[in-house]
Length: 227
Image (cartoon, rainbow, N blue to C red; front, side, top):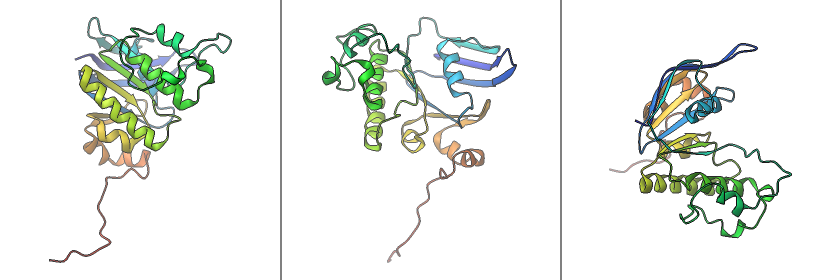
């Protein structure tokens, strides 16, 4: 087990506001966990707890010793006045000799501030896997990438997971893509509304209400079968 959360919660002091309460789940090696939930449900706060950027104000978050983590944020808050090429940025992130999952050789001399959303996501993703982390945490990793690109991205993600035996925690709105490659789904709305396999979570009414149009897939006949 890489990380275990037991009754974990996080409350802001002033004004007092509970962002998360009673969160219980484990992140297992070589697994994909997807966190879904409406905007403002506490998903990014949960990521910060997992990364150790903030400490729980209730309960515990226990990490395996010597765990290495890679993180792809939703946005890169880089200083616009600090000129930095993609190549320099990656050199700060880890071993350059590792292969990059996405080919970004044509971007290496460009400023990270001049990249499109999709290009930046690929650079951030490559940077996050340079250290071959035990756990890769991705916050909305396919923002700015079109549907074909999203599908290729998730295929690449699963390849990497299997190759390096890494665990992945993913925050995503691309439910249809994600559910095809996920082991465990956590539906979050300040607490864990439900969790389980994609098949199980798909059936739960609360999830169907939070995500209209995401009912279980049913095959409708618009033709007749001949015996």
